[in-house]
Length: 633
Image (cartoon, rainbow, N blue to C red; front, side):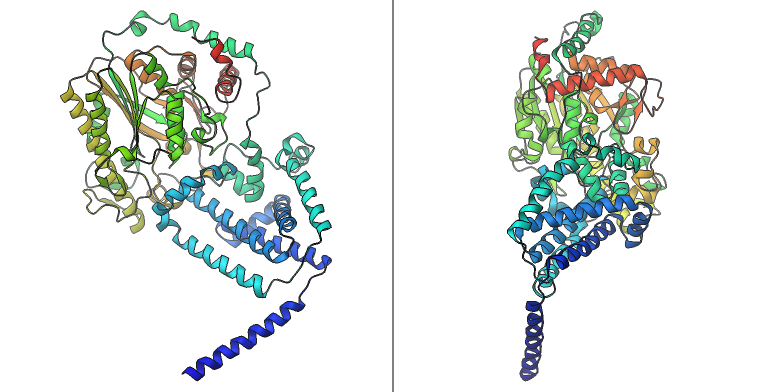
């Protein structure tokens, strides 16, 4: 046996020696180098699109139908390879780095699309720390991909050693490549301001920024990604100046005094206001063709039928909770920001007008609660800028019960009640839960109190049952919170809702298997988009309130309800959003609904004027000179 193994090793040694001898002889000329790059990048481009589309057939079908777009993607791949060549000066590391990087990005975009319904964006690189932190939670979803990437890296290193020919670029060639690409890149990034825009329009190539999945699928991964690069920068509106900001503020502060005395007089009591943003809370009974062994949210349904309720239209699906928080707390809209960007991380740099700051100015103690890492989404930095005096995060939940993978919702209810109890002044509490965060693996809970029946795969059934169990716990936590508040006996109002619909498997697995939606996101109707963004909410109080908010409303308009509950006076931005919501209660990226519940494909002129004023004031608050501060107390 030993002699046999020795012969095998000697045989491999001879083979490697022969390959190494041939390898030493394979030194490319400059002409052959460029031919090699052209062939390599062609393969890379096809590989990227095969990954993105799920099959080589789909990639070639797209190539044949969009040859000009394919050529542009091909040219971008060539530029990436040549840029790496200018840095490394050697063909082998260029091949290894370019191939691994491009396939890694394509895989990342594929996974993000499957999880969140949107492709990879340039600004996603600002969230690498958070993606890394959440990676263990999604390990079951991406294990095969991680194994593939490991094998790819190994294969590329072996290929680099034994198969890829040698080529060393001269310093002159490297300098020419580097300078040429540095000059060319700004032209590509800012193509809208160059003659290239005209060329693309004539070729019927368009940046589909309003539906990013379609942008990536239609324009290809690299071209779609490149088109989004300019959106990492926010440009000043043409009519932005101090006079315009003053006009908008004056128009939206003078009417405050005209509000009826009944709605804006100083209340005899200052009630506690509690806002609970429950992770992925939604009503799964909306799913057709499935049934549950019991109602997963019976208490919420009781409140919905007996108290004031409505539907919030979320700006996101399956994740990016911080953007929902941003809209609710500031009255500003993510519609004006690049799709997929996170306002907390990218755009809030100084204190800005907000719901917490208004409550604070009216004598409230303002508290945020979130049982996760305080640095996630930069909440530890952003919450003080929004006017929160206290922030209780994961480190403050000592000996808290873990339900599944996160701190249970019941623990959050206990924390809320304890803050109410220990505070002499009225409290404004903004709580964001964590227990029912996706993904929903079948083995998440040791015991489930609810089961699902329907024509579902075992994977889909397991996902839905796990999600439903989390809803049962969320419903119990809401009941417990109200019981505790009743025991305290203080006047209190609670607004309870989810942040977005849950992520129920790759590529909307449960939604598609139940027939809730069909097809890819690019083929969804306006009604489909609305269904995937509609979250129920309910308001409970133990004192008399007369606030009507049934129907649909965008999240950036929801903050006004909190002010109404406490009879806290608006500032200019919330007075503006109040006026806007009375005309257009749903204002979002993919859907607009007017006061008559009519869906609008485009806004009429008078609403476009509102939209422009909205953007001007948001630009001034987040990016401009903060002229608004000169016009308010």
